[in-house]
Length: 607
Image 1 (tube, rainbow, N blue to C red):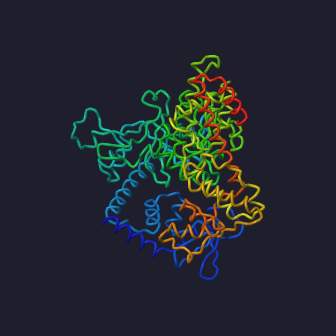
Image 2 (image 1 turned 90 degrees about the vertical axis):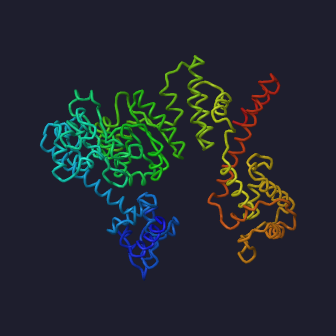
Image 3 (image 1 turned 180 degrees about the vertical axis):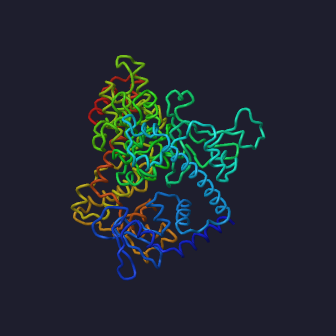
């Protein structure tokens, strides 16, 4: 019933909402007839190709081909999931969510009211403690008044019940304050006590940093000690995830500090910079490095990485340059790889963190010049204490590297890393490959999709290219190559193209996509495809034909001919190298000196 209610609610919400009103807040729409046009917010362009139709409630771009309804727009532009987009639009339209979602919405609104009132209290106290304000604006912290206001920094006074009494006076219950982790029970209080006198403020004598989620909603607080002697109780304390009355609105593993402020810069630059602490983000943001987010002093989590992946596919990991920071950077890199990022790591000068560098440099370019950017292998080798002459040290370093090599999906980048590592550690490439195979326990390239997609693109271009152009690339890929291992039908088709082209070198193949009336693609029939292509292939019989070919006969691949061939060459070479390495391992096992010499020479020639 809930799904039905939500579906009906969404349909009604979209039908009663003016799409131009909301999209017009993002781009400048100009009316042409009954529709509106603008430069697309999703890609750079000089001529308007972004089109909004208010009658249909749809938008589309003829440049980047994005399109959909208003919810789709919010999902794309604001990087929201579907439910978040529905809530976002409903809030903007002032409409309550249906059923249990409405109840949850009311509960969330009440929670935000409590947190906002607490934050108002904290910010007001900062004004009454000039020594705390002076600390924030001093050379040690270097924050300007605008930044303090933008981040709504505050102070929790040293007393035991200032916030408690303030919120009590606003009519909030003990349960409200406990659920948001704003108060704690005294050890002397009874188990079932419900008196305000049995509780005290959780945040005391600390600088308060409010934490907002990626939607800009206040979810909790971090408190940093003002007096260093109080650090014995923890330099930072955060709102907890859970309380005796249920979960708080703050979920640490899902939250990236500063993402609400950094999101647009991350999207524009295509890369996020991940750091650790709250002030690392605040200081760097103040100095113009706007694509920085912080894990909030906790280890980077899979949930945080999944959230960040909505905004970019590149990440620069920039942790503190001490042992703990280096370990955290490696862990973050491993998590990032697993979720499809292309991570780089940055190393700051010894004894400096991003907060220090940001205060010293004052602008984005100067900050970036102080960072040493490294790929994973460079970072591991640079930050690992090892003796190149000690086999145990080299073994440990190679084991660390193998884990990341096995995660790298770009075969070209992997080969480059192996080559650089071989030189740095003075270790033969074959030894490094053996560590990689041991780490993943399966062939180095196990993706079914990349070589198969490239083969389909290659064959499409062969089928449709003019004879002179086709002749340039024909037979570039050996018929026996393992790039065809996922689709024997394509291999047979490729052999057919080569043989027919050799028999009739002056004749174009010129295969055009079949028209819908020629073939019934609602019911794919082997005989229909067979008959159609038999005519096109000069009556040659194709015993096996891949049904998938119908897809790219209709749709031209996105990869051009030259790029396709270049990438396929790389895969062919990589498969050849794998086979040779396996052969070399077998030769060593059987102590076949002749084979060792021959295969080693072939490997040197190949790489």
